Length: 249
Image (cartoon, rainbow, N blue to C red; front, side, top):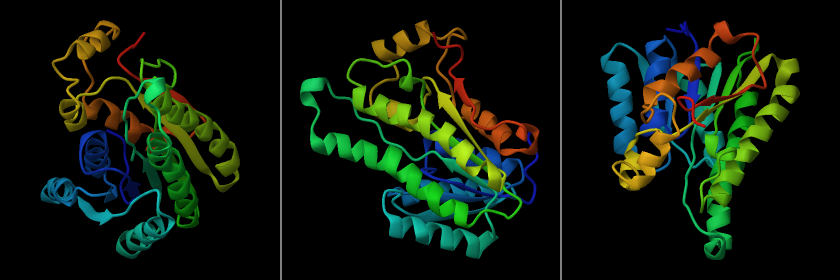
């Protein structure tokens, strides 16, 4: 397990799924964790309860990552609670599939506002509150940036943007000793994939058939890679985009 003792981490979109798994992993590694959520307060409170009942430190903070005012409040609350930030995980994201003829302005803006603008606004504000010694930013992308399923052109475009932003920010923030990397999950079993009807469907079978390790991922599979990137063990890594997809091909 990575050593994150005395570190402060902000995880966006952490009320469930991959984000919840990341928050729990960082806390288990020693970090105090700010569990951000957009609307699922009950879910965020459960994540906090899981962490604190195990002896960790965590608070839940509501904020829409696509709102500058909300983002400013998020980091104000985080710093008041735990002090300067060492780790940011840009996990908040949404997905919605639509064929070309079904793409609308609303569809495009909804996904880009959260997945791209939100990431930029959060990172912009986070940098103001980072520990003076630097730290680590981990973006959560997707293998869909490269392996584009039908109907995912807008979603995949946002994740392609995350790949590009990761490399650009690594260059821009290196003088501040802030490392920036991306973890791009493959198919992962979460509340979201259950709700979307992926689990148990032919689409799940197709994903698994293209995954060398022969199963869907679990949030823990992604969380452990994020914790590594956040730790001093990855101190010589920045600008890296890692596919965490069980050997998806």
